[in-house]
Image (tube, rainbow over all chains, first blue to last red; front, side, top):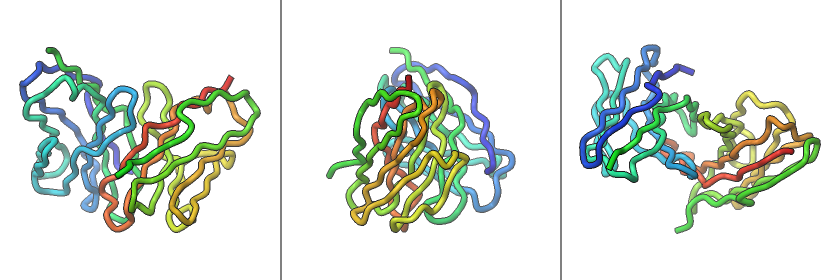
Length: 111
Length: 113
């Protein structure tokens, strides 16, 4: 499985945008970039995913570099509820591919 | 619409015992995956069930086994428990035809003493 590299932690202020980086220099052409997050004492939850183009949904935006070797998850206005561990995961094309989690990045949000 | 449910919430077992954890997938989902999450680590993939068969397996010993029932619910069994099996066990469900999003349950916290 291709690996991803994320900083260990990041801090942000409430109501400010947050950019969470992820490096995946060995990504293959058929790997999708997925982001999940895990709130304290909960199971992970899906945030967003993409292949080549930037993606937006109600939770976040995903910006993918042109060479696909890095991506950035963007939370437009951080809230205290966004404090969580965020995982960047590469998922091979194919039905029900397994998720290979790293350690993720721990986001703290200051009021 | 109920999401993924798991039982029990917490469990304490003694080394050498056997344990069974249960998972009910989100309504309409047909695929169940199990993950083990040690404290401070990301979840690690154990195996995945689809159409009542194990379709993929991670790097876990044969002490870990599972089952999927016709109603898509699933069980995870662990035999000969070791202290190192203490972890949060997560179940995730998805739809085979739309696998990009997996829904996770709250997990079962297993403590082996």
